[in-house]
Length: 276
Image (cartoon, rainbow, N blue to C red; front, top):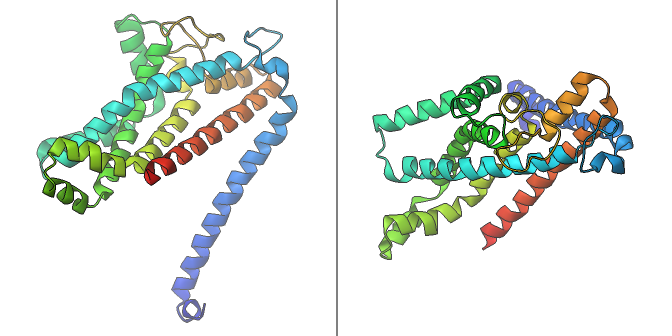
């Protein structure tokens, strides 16, 4: 503390950092408490009915659609993002102009508003390809949205793996491909999972892109070519109608619990993979 007192600038910076950390924590706690206070009293068994009606704004169809949408989007985006990152880090030559183009494209995609993705998905997947409003159209649109996030996070995770791991594997006679998939990739799993968690958060909370691609039908479709709403779209529709505000707050609670549960589960999996 004496060092901070002797240097007023350092003291001011320390206080600003502490203030920012405390303020961020308080905002998070306020949001969680506010949602729980307004939503928990309206969590009733009827809210989890398998069928949505005008008398009972059930969230269960939207919850099931959210799980399906998340799974489809990750199934498309995660392999593409990981393989693209492996190419950039392990195979492409440093300083390659093609690498610069790929990174510029990735950064550009990550900065595009979600409403633009929604319009693109509607024009291409819904209209041009003739998929109509469907979970598949929504999943492909979301996969394009989260691809830059997974790709960049995987790339940074691969770069953080020490070169000594690669050199040791090569010294034992392992080839490039075996080294990447047996040594480098397992070491980068925790960082890759962090990117997947962020991607899941964006998928679960997305509304604009899905309204133009997956639609807003309040039921579980019979297949991926059917239309259905996710929890975020369901909550938006309830709030915009103004007739089901209590159910909208209850949906927010379920959405919050879902995100926290996914993050916790992913953290546990990352720890087990790291120990293994």
